[in-house]
Each structure stands twice: as structure tokens, then as C-alpha cells.
View 1 (spheres, rainbow, N blue to C red):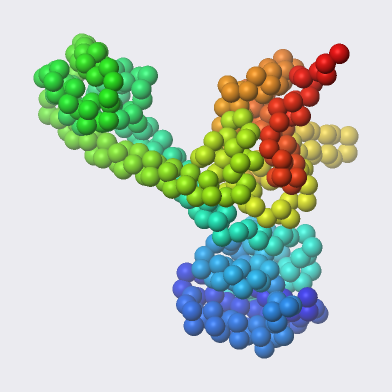
View 2: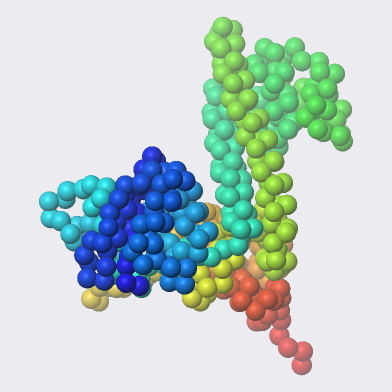
Length: 407
């Protein structure tokens, strides 16, 4: 590369800077976040020597957005630089801690000029893999929002309606039964007036098809248990608040269901579906989350160790003089790490070999989270090998010590 491009992006406009190998400014411009602005950028790059066979690389502080999508679609190397790293590089160029959009674009261009070898271009994932990424992350976000909505509703019910929490302690507030009953009995006073027929009708509206009568009888009995009560006016106000939170929870649950179905449909079309779901603990949704974070560009990770470090499953060593500490990674892909915890936990319930590995780690002194992280780390190495070689998961190869050769 002889010319390097840095773009300081914003919502309405972007500052562009081009520098040569000596660090001299070749061109600078502010473009709008429109198709016209992108056309001006391509003209600017072409004037600096950009060609289809030798495109000018671009450094920018985000991996998302229409501008990044257009640059990637053109086959141009795009480097997403962490803003914290850019701030450190900025201190190399000024001691006054001054800052401007043009100066930041210049810093980004110089990062590529001097340190392109220590940064990675955005992976060349297929459009289908990028679509799975969008859906899987949206589903994960919706799941987290649903958890938040459940906790908010539970906090309110605990203040004035503990009998309801006891009645659905096993099913959970996010269950269709709990939401259907709370909609018709948002207060203890309303619950005391509920008839058996009203509860059965609510359960049917919620989608229950079996054991409706005994379930309704149990709910009616639990809701009528003695409990402390607020003043009727206060109780009614808190019931109104609970209904408002219930509406948000209903929306969150519906979003999780719809996005989960869309994620599974897209993931089933991907060529890596068979390999990923062959692993114990991975199904349509969790497998889609794994694909969403690692992508399908085989050159993204140099080896399995790079993938493990990216996921945060591999430990990190800090050495200074005679002091050496080995700890878990805190800088990682948090989405993949969260999925890995679920993956390893489900594997311990579905795979005897995985469970034996987990028990062995616990016996050596690992706590629950550390043992699951170690199992996740092992699975990642195996997944990298399977995706690279096109093999599906084999329990005997994954845990050979548990399958001794026949005498």
C-alpha cells in the first residue's frame, strides 16, 4: 500500500484523510452520509491511485453502518480500529490533547501506515453469515430485554402481590400461563374474586392445551392464600403499574419468539449448520449465535488459539519480573462468551463425556464458572478443527481418554 485512508465517521458527515508512505497528507475532505458523499469518497480515492486490483485500505472506528457496508461491498479492505486505541495513538501526535475530526481521520490513516500488520481487516463473511449475525444478535438482545422486563415486573409484584410470585415460582413470570392470569387478576383483590372458569379461559388464551382444570384449581388455591395487603387505593395503583410492565413483557416475549424463528430459518440455510449443530449443547439458536460471532471466513483466525482468545475462554498470563499471574480474560467478545456459558452448561446435561470433563475439572478445584469455561475452551478448539476440515463432531475423538481402545 502506498496511500492510506482514515475516516472519522459521524451521524451526518464523515471526515476523510489520505496520507502517503511518508506520512504526508495527500488529500482531505468532509463528505455527507449519503450516496452523493460516498461517490465523492470513491472519486477522491481514485484520484489518489485507487484501482480494483489494488484498492486503498480504509481505517474507521466502527464495523457497522451503511458506509462500511458500501466499502466492504466494493471489495475494499476495511480496518475497524477500537476508539480506545485511536485515543492512545492520538497522544503520539499531540501533547496538548487537542482533538478535531480532521485530526482523528489523519490519526486513523497513520495507524494503517505504521501498524497495519497488528490490526485485522474486517472478515470477508458471506451475506448469509452476516444476515445470521444481524438476526442472532437481535434475538440475544431481545432475550436480555425480556429478562430485564421480568425482573422489573417481579420487583413490583414483590411489593404488593407475593401470592402471585409463589403461584408461578416454577413456571416463571415470562410463561404464557403467568402472563395470561396476571392480565385478568393484576391485584390480590381481583385474584380473590377469580372464578375457576375465568382462570381456565385465561390459560386457553395463553396457549395451554393440557391439564387445564387441575392447573386452574392450583392457581386459584395459591392466589387465595392469606397475605399482607396495602390500602385498596394503593393496591389498585400498583396493579395498574403491574399491567403496564406486563404489556412490555408481552412485547418482549413476542419479539424473542419471532426473532428466534427468523434466526433459526436463516441458520438452517447456512453450509456450516450441520457441523455446528453436531456439537452437544448447540441447537438452532445457540448455534446461530456461535456462527454470528465467528463468521464463516476461514482466514479470520490464524489458529484455534486465536479463536479461544477472541471468545475469552483461554486464560491470559501477566508476567512482570518474578511475578506471574494467570487469570481469565476480561477483554473478549461478550456475546460469544455468554453463548459459550450456555453451550457448555447444556453440554453437561446432554453429553456424558462433557459431564465427565466438567466433573474432573471440579474435582481439581475449579469453581462452576471456571469448569464450564474450560469445557467451552475445549469445544472451541474442536469446532475450529471441524470447520476447517469439514468434519462433524465425534465424541470419541473429542474425549479419547473416555473411550479406551478395545483390548
